[in-house]
Amino acid sequence: MLINCVAYQDGTKLSDIPVEQISDYLEKPDCFVWVALKDPSPEEMAQMQAEFHLHELAVEDALHGQQRSKVEEYGDSLFVVVPTAEMIDGTLHRGELDIFVGRNYVLSVRSNSRQSFLGVRARCEREPQQLRKGSAFVLYALMDAVVDSYFPVVEALESQLDRIEGNIFNVGEQRENIEQLYDLKREAAVLKHIVAPLMEATGRLYGGRVPPLCESTRDYFRDVGDHLYRINALTDAIRETITTAIQVNLSMVAIEDTEINKRLAAWAAIFAVATAFFGLWGMNFKYMPELDWKFGYPLAIAMVSSVCGYLYYRFRRSGWL
Image 1 (spheres, rainbow, N blue to C red):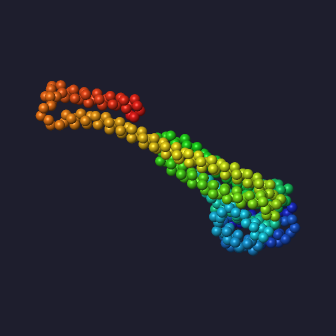
Image 2 (spheres, one colour):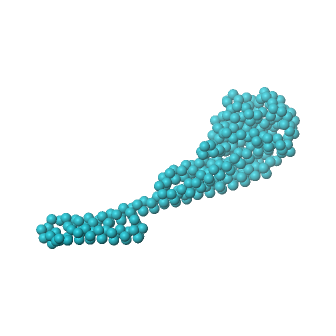
Image 3 (tube, rainbow, N blue to C red):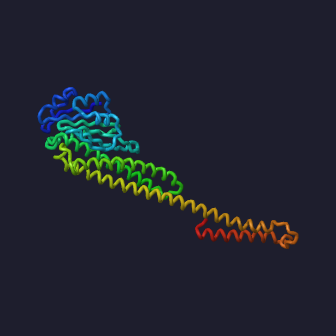
């Protein structure tokens, strides 16, 4: 679906143009075209390929989606894959932004993502002095918007982790906590797999041999790289905290099991004493003086009760009961 198709000249918006006129505006001096698509059909991508002369391999990657973060050069043009990350109903959702960049054009293709980039376009149009840098600045603005959208995801993961940590010491909630921690660990791993490759890809735009298109904006891409390093460090901290929380939760389960075993052992010891006494007096020997004694039965009950009561008192004081 076509979102925008706009022509710019010398950092100023000329007008919205129909797709069929893209090639005409590309021939004008100091002019570039910025097109935005969302979940395009193969027919729309074929039309864009014809207008911008896009490489067929890059177009194929954009149509298939779910690509690893990368920066690929095709002659004097670039193909950049930037994964998006959004929290939808408490679940991390991964999308993708594919960006085709040439000397006088930018084509952004958004797939499986609710994130809108209308604010990025408005920001660029408010800064004509920056927009004069051409397509490279638009590429930076789009990547910067995507990377900045990772911070709310990190904050959401941290909030979930804080909530689960608050329930770790609640008796009876250990199983639920373990399940939630593993779900959170999986989402943190997804974010890690998004950020780490993107750090490497972004590094190609400001370090070492920089593509000629990005030579004048390498400082801007370095700023994007700094943000990615921060997010990567926060993600690593979350994963380490989750691992620690899982270990603590498992320790709490073991402690609770030990407490239960101690109670069972204490009651077993008490009943074992009673069983020993009654087992002794339950034997059918002919000569057992206490069987014929008037106070034998009350004394036996009193003795068993006293010993069991003493054991209960000692177990109670030691914390076993």
